[in-house]
Amino acid sequence: MALDVLAVAPLYQDPDINRVRLIAQTTKKSTTPPKPLPPTKTKLTTIETKRIMSVLDETIHKVEWVTLLSYMASSSKNSEGMLGEDIMKAVREHEDLCQILLDRINYLQEEERQLQEEEEFEDEPWFRDRVLSIKVQKSHLPPLMQQIKGSTKNIVRFLLSNPRAASLLQVQTPGRSAEAQSFIDRLVELRGFLFEKLLTSPMEARDKTQFLQDITRRNQRNQEIIDTLENELAVCVRNRDAEDEYEELDVIHKEEKLQLEELKRRHDVLVEEFSQIRAEQEINAKKRLEAEQEMVRMVRAATLIQALWRGYLVRSMLRSKKKKRSKSKVKGKGKGKGKK
Figure: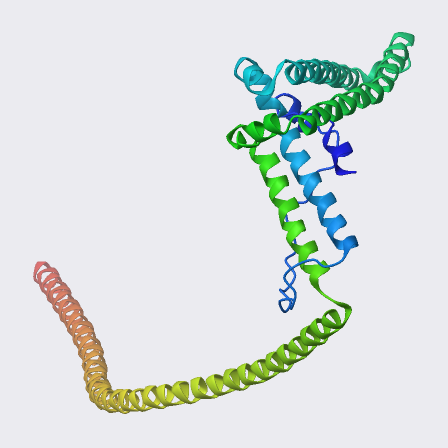
């Protein structure tokens, strides 16, 4: 029964106890099936279906009571006058059991954490003794949880025997935790699905199945058509883009062609100017070469003239000296003859 599962300590909504994860958590993501066609009937007609819904409704009511135990314990002074001494006594006993369970679990978690930090001493005798002690203490938890389940059932029995107290407790929904309220909402949603399922006859179920299959096939065909159209659209868009692109390239080509012609014209002008400059440079170089050659000839001529002039001067000097010597000799001979 769902009540047996809900009787454990985590549904006792003290904030510390909620941290103890003694049962598996439900997944947050739920798949929402497509809504079938509405059933033709609006009321349950068979005894079996009514009993099934009665059991589920009773379970939801009990879950609503159990998830308010924390509120009953935290406001015991106000709740005692509203619910009665017997119920509050059972609630306090339940609270004590839950606190004991919480303390033991916290202690065991701390012991395991310390053992993990001291794993290097796992071969030591004292380490094995502590591991054994933790195992023994863990073995005491299931009986304690059974006691908590029993106390929860005892409180539920008190509430069933006291409809007034149950009604007064039912209106205290603000005291329920968000997690517990979410669990109840899921149960109510399950009740709606189950109620709709029980209202549906086998023939209607077949019709709904066929209807869903037809819808699925139709959706598949529509999706195939959509995919085909999207592919064709993508091809058209690519072709169109290739044609926007062609026109742009053609415009760019024409602009570049005009620019090329302008550059050619400028190039021709520059080539002509360069040819003129080159011709002028060749003429100037030729004139410069001729001038240099003329200068070389003039230098050579001047050098030759100077050499000839110097030779002439030297010869003239030599002749004059020679004449002077000959004259002196002639005079010497004349004087010698006279003395004789």
